[in-house]
Image 1: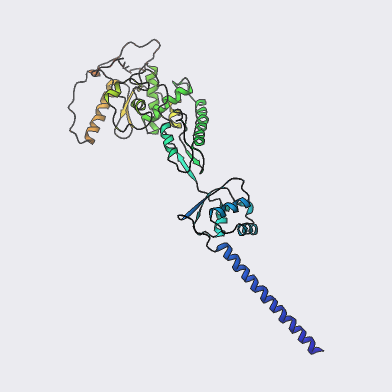
Image 2: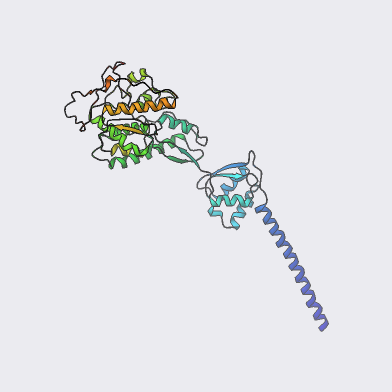
Length: 385
């Protein structure tokens, strides 16, 4: 009896060991299979080193799996769904554009979607660029689609860096730029000081666009705005070179110097020939230039010219301005390797002040330069810069 009992017990242990061994084999096999499913190399990209996949917002696991399979980055939709169900990531998959490396494992693809490592695209509209140049920027961005049927009105776009999505229309990006502009200028207009010469928001944007094009030095903008404010209040013409260029190119670079014939030519933006402000902005000004026009520096300056350092030399009187112009011309001659210019008597250096219109106030000590309606080569106005 005892012997048979021992034999039965030994048999059960043998059976249990055999069962455990079999179970362990299946566990190991299952782990190997799981590892192969999750970590083995996935499909190779159909072209190049990566595959671009864009998952729409609101897509469920079934739709995501089907799209990944369709794009060729996973082999099986069922295995993908099983994997995200097992690791609890089914509800943490994020929409967006993904760049999936060629041969990425299923686990790598899932981690990419859970971490939200989306491809980000940006377009930048620099301060002082025209609306035509803004359209050029958008047309060169390959992730955007659609045509721009009409160039936006000048001065209606906000210079900024915008994040864009693949497949977004260029028209929608322009609409975003215009909304950003409207919001920003409304805020700045509410902060204007009584010193501004701008009577309307449109006038502020026009003058700010000229300030923007005149100087790239942010610290100078309030002073440049102050000069133009003084000139407008004194009934003087703005005499801004960038306005001439805009009348010729409508906002694109001229690529050369301004000709004397262009200086004298009549066009609606030539502030050497028109009084007051041009009819439209000449660029899309940034916040600093708009703020400078709405809060100009209180100064007696009426003139400025490049000083050779990237900034400008400012002057209260025409004689001071002529001296600054002479210095700038000498700097240009040295840069060009030319000998010093022989000094000459400038008949225009005499006091040209004339009777001013009623109500015009000139800063103390300043001299007003009246620009003839039909300038001759001898009396043609000197450029501001």
